Length: 329
Image (tube, rainbow, N blue to C red; front, top):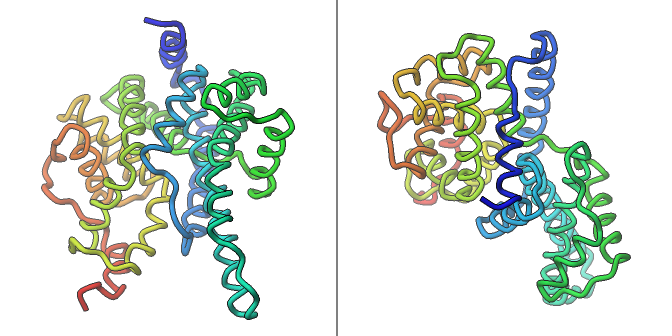
């Protein structure tokens, strides 16, 4: 086993549960819940998504090559997602303004090419920024980044690298310390441990990391299956898809689904107990937890969640989506 992989496995095995006071856990869980609610609300109407498989895989492999902890790779994906969505929204807003004011439109082909030409640089900048947020672990130096870019055939200077980081920071108003699904998973596992979960948190943690990687790498097909199940229609309309954006940004829902799927893999006889604990902790409906775990298991091991063949979203969420006009009407 090579050095980088051994280093990453060692960092995972050092993860400990049960070392934090319950009052601290309660406060942290409440804070995460508030952050999640705000993120879900802000996601309404957001344009586009850049959590594509090739992009996520690139970030994951690069983070592994640089021996970064797992949380860094997730945070880098989220920073890149927010930044690219901002870029797309700015371009759309600019085009709309020009049409309204009947101004001469810009050369959008040139703007698109400019955006694509700097994409790898922006991606690497997001990974570097994420590494700086976990300064207790490892920060990626400018020399390392420039050498990597040069190996891909990109000749950038240190000044261009710093400008790229600054562009990302300014675009996001320097708000890059974004919560990741892993933070929700680990917090819920901590609570499950205190609640007497029959499956050890350390075992669930290892499986959760694998499944969370899978959800990121298969983001579109997993969420597409959730959308189709929630509206009971194999061909969702555009409006229904737009309404579903907020579900994609619900990290608490993603966390409980991931933990439930992990519990089923580790010990399916304890699945009902784990799901019951998750429901009481988060208030998320049992049907939603079952549906998400079903989607994850179907795309990973091809298994069904126990007791349900096709779980459904809770009534309020399902009604909101079904209220949107169908593409067939």
